[in-house]
Length: 478
Image (cartoon, rainbow, N blue to C red; front, side, top):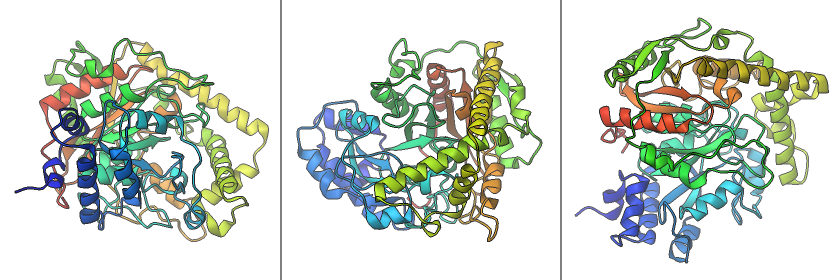
C-alpha cells in the first residue's frame, strides 16, 4: 500500500488543499509527507538548505488561517523573505555562519501565511540572487532532478528543483532578471513573473527590477497563488491596476484570436541552441492550431546591443546596497573574502559611480520601459520567445575565472538573453514547460503580455496546458 508521501507527491497545491478542505487528510499529514520526501530525496538535489520541520509540524496543528492553500507544505526562498523567528542568509557565507534571525515578516510572507501555506524550510538561492544558476558557496550547488550534473537555474533554483522532484507542490520564487522563469524552464515548471506592482515587495523598495511569486507544476496553482497575494502594501507607489475578476476565473476562459509575435532567434544575433529554437517553433505551431495569429515580430529595442550596458550603473548600485543590507544584519562590514567575486566586483564598480551616472541609468530604464511597451500598444497581444538561449547549463559553468570575476556574468548573458528586458519594462511574462530535448532536458517557452495583463497569460497558458499537458512528466530522480 502506498504511503501518504507517495500518494500526494505529484498532486498540485490546489489538489492537496482540497484534501484538507474535504477532510480526506490533515495539514499535519501533508506536512509530514513533504518532510518524508525531503529527507528521502533531497540529498542529490541539495535544494532545501534550511529545514524547519518542528516549526512546520507545530504550525500544522495550530489554529492557522483557512485560505486558498490551507495545509499545503511550502518552501521560502533564501533571499530577502524575512520570516519571524527564522534564519535568512541570502546565500552569503558570512550570514550562513552568523545565522541572523528575522524579527518580522515581509508583506508577502504574511500573505503566504494568510493563504494557509505551511513553510517547511528554505530553498537554496545564489548569493543575493545575482546569477541564473544556484551554487552558493555556503551550501554548494543545487542540482536539477532531470539531470543532476545540470543546474536547476537561478536564482530560484532550489525552489524549482524541489517542486520538480515532488518534494513540495509549490514554492516561493522571485525574479529580478528572469529568476522565476529561468528555473521554471530548466526544471519543467510553470513560472509567472507578475507585472511590477502586482505583488508588493514591502518593506523593500518597489521601484527596483525584482518581483515575487512562485514556481508551480500547474497553471491553476499559479493563478490561485496570484489571487492570494496580489495587491499593494501601505506606502507602495508602484501599483498595478486591480484585476477585474479573480485570476482563477481566467482558467479555461476564451482569450479570442490573439496576435502573437514570434521571436525564434537571438535579437542581437548571438547563438540560440537548436533545442530552444525547436521548442519555440513547436509552441508557435500549437498556438496557431488553437486559432491564434502567430507571425514574426518583436520590439525593435530588444535588438539594441546597448540595452544591458545602459543599466550597469543601476544593477551595480543595487548590488552595493544589497551588501549594505547584509552588513547591517551582521552588525559589521563584510570583507572581500566573505562575498562572492562577481558580487564584490559589481559593488566595487558602484563605488566609482556618481549620482549623475545613477540618474542616467534610471532615465535609461524609463525610456526603455516605454519603448518596449509601445510594441504591445501598437496592436500586438503577446510575444513568444524561448525562455533561454541554451538548455540547462552544467554545474560550474558560471564559476568566476581567476582574475576576471565578471566572466561568469558574460556566460550568464549568453544563457538568458530573453528574460531581463521584461524586468526593465515591468511586464508580466510566463515560462511554460512545452518541450523536452532528445536527452530528456526540459526546454521552456516564454510568453510576454502587455503591462498588467496577467489575465491574458493565464488564459493562454491554460489553453496550452490543456492542449499539450505536462503533468505526467516526472524527472528520472523521482
